Image (cartoon, rainbow over all chains, first blue to last red; front, side, top):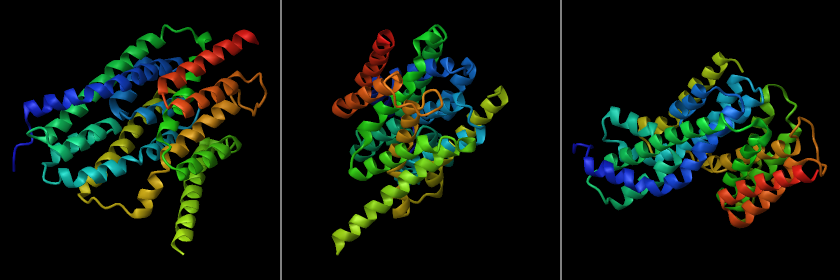
Length: 234
Length: 106
């Protein structure tokens, strides 16, 4: 088997991630600032970025922690939010099949939305000697930028007065994430159903209303989509 | 949340995130059941919307559809900006600015 490592490919992977960092770094700063303003101690805020390393799930976790949700439900919600990584894992599986287990474990750790976007393109185009080293570089660049920007946000957040009401940046961040990803009307159905039910179910114990609302949105969208597919088929 | 519970979330969150990323890479198959694939597409919009709406309509813990609910008014405005521009920075900035202006007015 060809050695997966190549310094040049690693560096060009890092470079390819740079344009995406323009979008990622501000989110990292907001994350760090929000986490401390919601009462999470600085080290734990940084640990979320270091160990969980999943932007949207981290934001959601901060909101739930601030709302007093039990830890098990927060972890369950993180799992649900990150289930989309199964799609990335499935896409990378055949490409990484021949790699040593250690490499697969390492690359999977770096398998985020941004690394997947840039990395998949490289596997299709093969501009470098080793797409694996390229992926490692692109993932590492993102990981380091995420850590540094979180740290900067923690530093800033500790200095922002509570009267600024920074917590409102959290639902705004979710709004900013939601609209660009709505690609078809079934996804809109999922969003509308989950959004309509969520405040009504908010009184349920253990924060389970959120998960129920999400589930209802997904089931409703799947149901309507398959029904309209059947109608088209007949 | 106590410090212990916080670390339970951090380590638990790490575990479930890494497992979803590693699972199929380790199994080595690129086939996901079609229904699961279809369902996964709906996860992000459902999750985000389920988080946004309660934050806007019950900022103090009970339903509040009045104009005094600055979070809701500013949130609707930011939603319109997000819908028309799909620009994340304009969305966040317009929401924060609208809320600051409303708080000054009321």
